[in-house]
Image 1 (cartoon, one colour):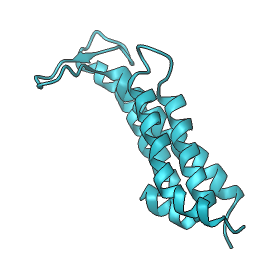
Image 2 (cartoon, rainbow, N blue to C red):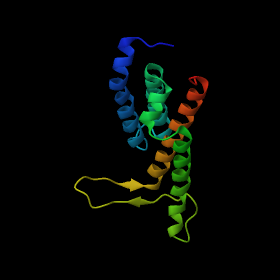
Image 3 (cartoon, one colour):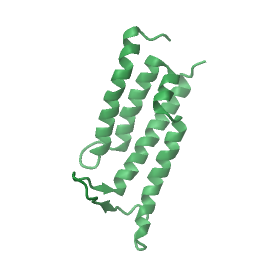
Length: 138
């Protein structure tokens, strides 16, 4: 498949639009609709669009790691978020914890957000791996 000149030129510019929107959906996921799964789908769709325009090799270069590595890091992060609750011996796995670091901006961190980031990375890795396997270049 040969992409048109307009598609090849605009793909790198348009890649950042879904990535920024996906990050916004990831961050606001606990207070409004969104989260790791939806954000990961939007990010993966941007990467798939880029792969359609520039080729799978260029998309893998943008990702910097193979899709399976994204899945592995995401699984470790999501599973590891539950172990943070064991700092308190009476708490169970996946007990919610909050941290309020002293920063100039108000930035509450919690274990549910760490879990969502793991889901985000797993979804990106899974979707891109499946699409890249279906449209593998010879």
